Image (cartoon, rainbow, N blue to C red; front, top):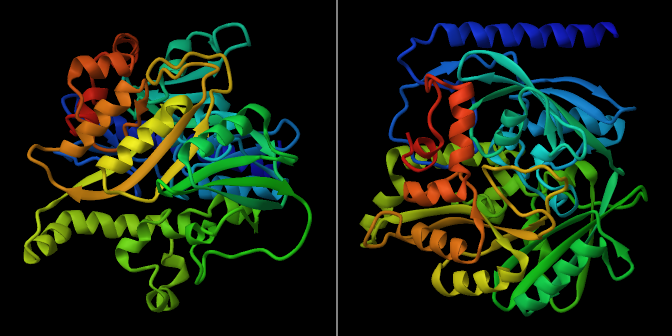
Length: 468
């Protein structure tokens, strides 16, 4: 082992010791949480009195093995730092979520997704093993099993399978060993317009099944719906061919570049800029802060043109109730946040979009197909193996209804009726029985009892729905 690798491992071990030391200082009667500088959760919290654990030594890439195509990564390492460490080797994580400050541990315990998910599944499927600080205050290693063994094996196979979608209620990943894949230095983009959502879904399904759009090989696949009559598939193909590339961290806005008349529009980005194409404008949500106005954009510092800064602005807005105050001044009702990602079977997705566009005044809408990659069962988010789903993302506000979360509740009912699932990073309103049926309640409680017998960590329902 090289001196640099030894130093990285030593630093990581010291970080784990600081984490454990901070855990031991928390009174047995107090709840526990991580002390994080950033968050990509959008739940309204009713309490914030849990003690924060010291994660300052768990933010780095420990090592990259270019021959084995693996990386050992501390749990609080952001994907921005992870990608910066792997790209020089011509490698990238199998799935790189859209926002730079999402952490690897967060994407595994909270489910991440991106445009490689139609062929690589979800981030937790590329995990080979992970060290987890459990609610009992122990660090255990949970590893993937051999093929044919149900997808996970060993003493802590139950924790390995239940960790995805547990949102830190079973423990915190302090180290993860993940698979990497080769990437070329550039991505050639093909944006294909559709005037009918059913035509788009049919083409998306053909690409997922074949990996091709006509003669074009497709490495990356997502889409955007601007209206019922204007939607696009965005196809990315890796290439080593050099040539001009676009830069959407300056005056141009990426999602606006997708729009065009009939047919196809082509574009090129570096691999790095492709992976972060959505981050500079938080998809399209930077518009709420004026960051897309040409004059404001000209003076807006580039270092602050990123999702983490817009997130801070949003948290300030929520803290001081600025948006609702402005609505009252103009004689309008307060706004309900509708910030959600849902997974709908591809054969029902056009039906869901028809309903959504007729009932929820939010656009654009993001589309990202996914299919589970391996054979493992993931009981807390039980998608069906061999079935294609479409992640539908929508992030905005609507006028409040007669009851709390009225629009979100209607969306939950529609998604369940279509045999879909909803991610839990934002507000949820399920009753306990329905929540348990959707998110593996019995399996969750069995693992919770084993690894957090004294309930030092929050219960998943309490965290996701009761917003504690």
